[in-house]
Image (cartoon, rainbow, N blue to C red):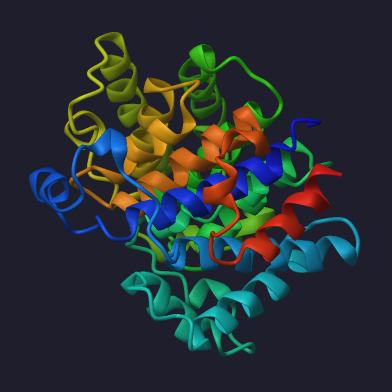
Length: 335
């Protein structure tokens, strides 16, 4: 990771978040009317981020604490991450239109005597599950099992739907592959293979009895529902890439990104359309009819993981909110 993939991914995530913050909840014609041609969109000044970056940092801090204490396992990870999520929930800076699921779940996570599964919103597969998961693709020295289990656990603390778990696992895996230098043209195929391989695997050590809170007869049935929705959206992504249309709203091809699997696919689409133009990736993702900040933060994480810290213009990177903390975590994981 000598290209400083972690710094690149975290910076890209925050820049995408800040660029998409003013355009979220607007359709494309309204965005173009307000901001002009999408290929010329400028980073707002000041460059404020949303809960997407705030919760990414919360997860990053929780992981750092857990790994300072030793081997990353479910019990060692759950407590500090849970505490960070609750701290975010109670912070006065939590005023950036946070998602309803995160708010409801974090209110319940405040009760440390209750198992976290009681807080998890089993019916929600919102993109809040995976907008924040990038750190798990960037932390070095995790096994595949640790990375997958931890990605699903951090999602499940708030979003308990199996699709939220599978999409978070896939998102972390995509970030990891790109940080390691995987050729992006083969990425969708690798993600489909990963989804098939993991389709019937329930990480009971990490998730406990979460599956019993749904309507499913078995843990396998529960988790495979999530992977099947992810496979379906990856097929839509593959189809969109066969006949790329850079000037068309990406949400029309792979969904508006309010749900976890759509945010993954549409973020990936924006990245894969402009592989060596990371700023264009962010601008395309921010000029979308859906959850623009979450789509753009994921697109930025993918681009930054692939291209490294030098992908981003200095005049943008230097003024992103939470810059020092983003750099500190990036430096820790790049080392």
